[in-house]
Length: 204
Image (cartoon, rainbow, N blue to C red; front, side, top):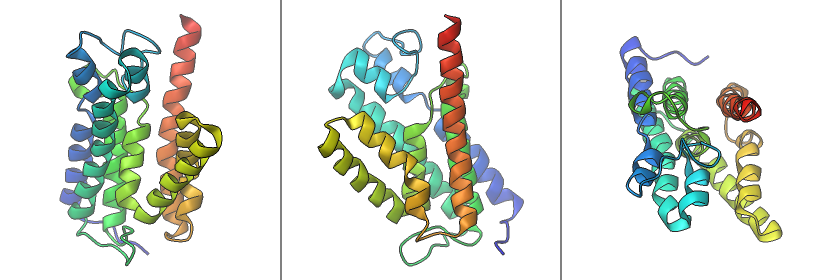
């Protein structure tokens, strides 16, 4: 059974992950062009809304930045937990709860950022970046699925959804069931944010 790391590393993962996630990349990038993504389009300060408002080139730094937040949070948790991984690089031992905590905290930071008035996005890219650290093989397979789906449908949005939603299944050959459940819990946060967005849209 996995032993939880000491309190200090867990606090480092929690606080560091949240602060990383709170960096409002979309707001900073779009703000340089005079646009607040929280006030236009679907009001989601993330890649898709910036892309719709300002185009793919302007949105590229948002894609990279929001993904990097998850990667950096995952690495922070991995190191805080002692950098324990299996042969394919999957987090294990005391590093697993710390990495999941850090990625979850980064997703919460992205959704409710302390540096942007607690008005954030849906955490999809931050989640994907975290998975790249938590289970690299599943991340690579998800990218492959995204690419295949895109070639078949000519839609990046559909490909991205296919890749993200398949991650728990793609993780199965590489990680214990407890990790799969933890990944599912992270995805529930994404579902919560989409649900909140749908409710807000009905009220307007």
